[in-house]
Amino acid sequence: MKLLGLVNAQEDNIKKIFTKRLNIYIFAIICTFFWASVYPTICLGYDEFFANKNYLKNIILILV
Image (cartoon, rainbow, N blue to C red; front, side, top):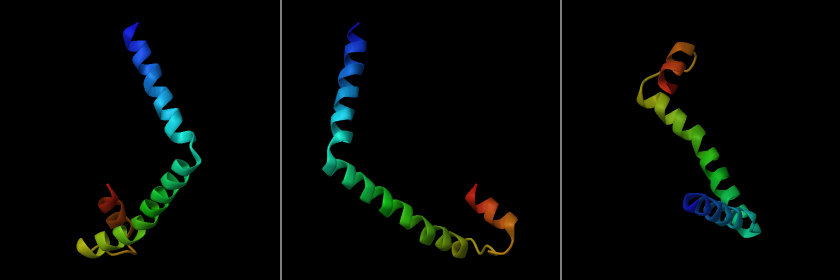
């Protein structure tokens, strides 16, 4: 029973964090930053591994 109380307390803490408006904005900005950084990172990976961007098998091999 003690474990169940601990889980409920953790869920309450998580709900408090994700229901505050400022925290939601901060998390959204962080996610947007990471999402926007994916494209340049993939392009750098293509250049680093000398992948032909027109050859689909190279692209899949790099992503896996």
